[in-house]
Image (tube, rainbow, N blue to C red; front, top):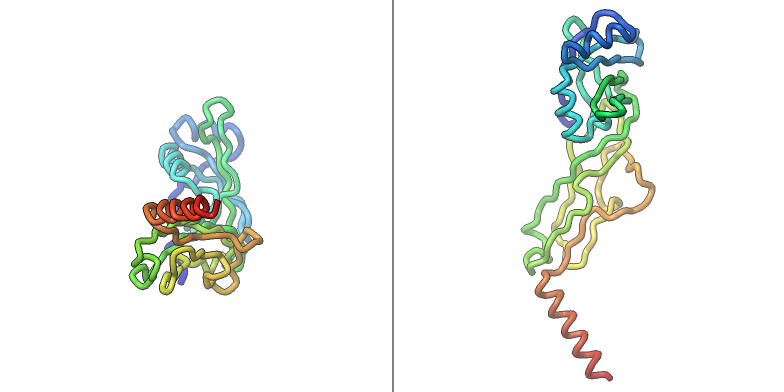
Length: 207
């Protein structure tokens, strides 16, 4: 099931070139352009504070948006560049690219862990350590999964969950080409320290 694609509301911008861009900035806007697809480039702008907030939230350049501009049809876009002031490091311009439903893109997909109450390791006091709460996948723009699910039923202390043990949507592939760790079930701190002490006592006895 595809996840909910967030809206990115922008305004059409009159004129092109540096003069029009400067005028937009004087009005508290950040100028931008939408390109690609089967349509001509579209000049747009977004309130500075809104763009800054989205940038601070993270993942702006790896999030698929539903672009809404008055007088234009909604279109799926992804940010390809954000230009910043070299001194203040604040956004001065941004580029969005239109995507077809078949376009392949890399996005971070959240991971959900289920059936913790059916994991023997949890019942023994084990602690779930999540190494990657999100996994970057290459997916098609028209079929973006809402989340990836890890079933913890049967997991014991010491077990590790790797990407190969997670069922991925059809056509989706990890951007990292190795069987990396997503999470592991570690022993309780008290149990681990007592085990270490026991091993130390055994070693001393052997000496």
